[in-house]
Length: 241
Length: 247
Image (cartoon, rainbow over all chains, first blue to last red; front, side, top):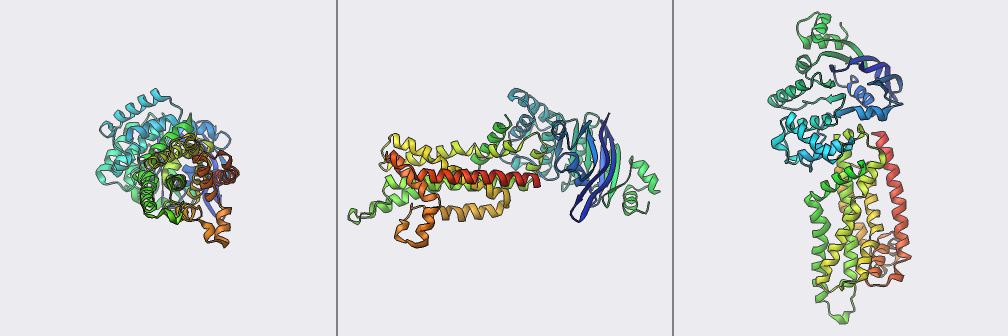
């Protein structure tokens, strides 16, 4: 089964087309990278697929459910780790996790169990009692991902998960994301091309509201006739390939 | 269930903020100490009754509630302008979970805050009676007014802006037009008219009536406040829903 299927998915604002006739298929269990320069349409695509904003044209099904007509069903099956820090600052790490589990319908005992399991899975046991607002940027992102995972989503959106992190924190998060591969379908948006190349099964490159090309990193390099992924991205995004 | 979970989170966020204790409890209590000291220094022949504890305590209990606009608006604005709200919007939470989750935890906090204020007033000689208990609940409509204003401002303004609007402007305005610090009829004119139109002095009058055991005098002042609370809560719900859809 495909996790995501879009057909001519479009989002138009008054004087701007943010996403233009996007046709995208993401298989279940896949880690799909969505790349593009600022304003390419990545965030709007994520917002539509996560039911935050309605498309103005076309259609999309997430895990078999229509994102407009069955938005409630979609919300129960997905979770999002937003671009910026999205944690409750004055709640402890454990409280943040339990809070999110309960929002998705877990009872008290189940929420506690899931929080403990997530703390262990993401190596966060030592910070369990620490207030989220006092964590470093890297640990806040880690918590944010843990909060997104605690509902056992079948589809996880990771929007720029390593933006602004130092190299070590970024590499630590890479290993966290790598551990998730296969268990859950992941849509990853990032500006770091090496991140996409290292982590993603397939990559889609968006430019000027359209999907310009998609494939594995190797396929995209071949398409752009270069050995360098950054160069391939530039050639595809600029439309020279 | 989700409403209760969200309300619990909001309660923790507010109570763990030192500003809640400083402004919500500390400031009104400090004012009580200062104004009681001033009252003690005023000769009885002057006939100045405004700062007598039976008048001061109900007034301060209402003034203390004005900070709830600050607490609720700051929390909502912070959530709204951060990605935390974005996260919640993609969850199965419904608009009523947000509105009730932000509003409901404030009401018991308002009762508790008024209770602390009246308990402190007893040190200065306020007798404990049924009137004091009644006054705690008579304060609920004005608490709802302040919470609704917080929801309104928090829905449309940035965290920085609500600090100024709800923290400085609203608390001052609600104090000036309340008959707590001075009798606005002495100023008269438009100032007195505005005082009569706004809900703050009516809330203080109702609280004073309740605290003194003059239960028959609680209304019609309290109707005035209940009317404001109903209209502002409705407006807050509409504006918040519009903002959710826009977000």
